[in-house]
Length: 76
Image (cartoon, rainbow, N blue to C red; front, side, top):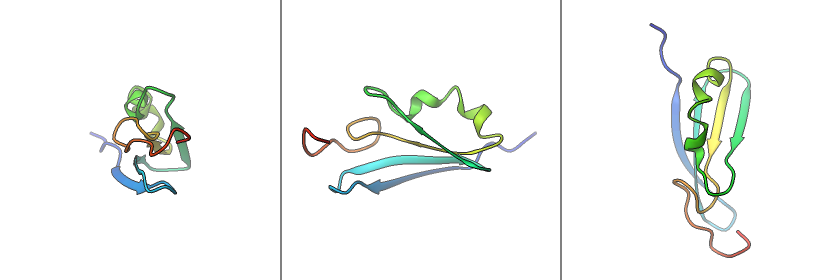
């Protein structure tokens, strides 16, 4: 049985201090996936098993989405 991808859930801060949640999965060259509006990084779930076999995949939640904090202004 092959071990699953390495998962590292982290939180960083945007320039305005808003918490931004992201995950780092797998090993290899880096691929960054950005969700669209009204979704979260969970929307990539169906692709992750295939991508993490060959790549380090970084997924993140936009402000106000998923586990990231709300935008502090209308401009984001």
